[in-house]
Structure formats: structure tokens, C-alpha cells
Length: 100
Image 1 (tube, helix red, strand yellow):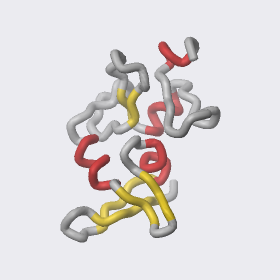
Image 2 (cartoon, one colour):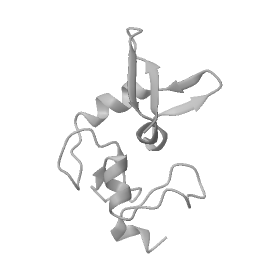
Image 3 (cartoon, one colour):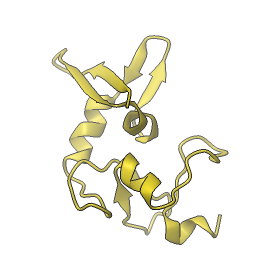
């Protein structure tokens, strides 16, 4: 799995899995590289994955009332489809994907 890195506010590099960075809503990438990785890591520390129950889940269902949050690798294991997103970073849990 490839790595992604960006500086936190103190100038320290923060490394995460590239796939996790790519699908975390606040993280982006431009010609200079990745940005907002430390924001995603901080937010993820407060969120538990709906699948494995471990902290660090930064990907959540787009349905406002849905509380499903997962790690990227847990999402792919439950059938979430990241390859057919027509409008940017849109992802839906298995319960809400069929209605889209």
C-alpha cells in the first residue's frame, strides 16, 4: 500500500495510507502534494470503524442521518464501491448504496 504525507501545523510530516488519504473528505492533493492529512488523522482518532471497531475511521456514508464510518480497507471488504463516484468523494454504506 502506498503512503501519503503532509506537514502538520508544527511542520512535522504525517504519513498515512494513500487510499485512506484519497477518500477522506478533508484531504486533497495538488501539484505541491497532499494536504490536510493531519486534520483527517485528528478527526479519525475520535471515530470508531463500524466494521472492525478500531479508531481511525475517516470515511463516512454520505446520508446525513447515517452513522456508518469506516477505514478504507474495511469499506472495500463490505462492498463499498469507490470506482463509480460521479461527483467527487461520494460514498454510501451498503444500506444506502442501492438507493443511489
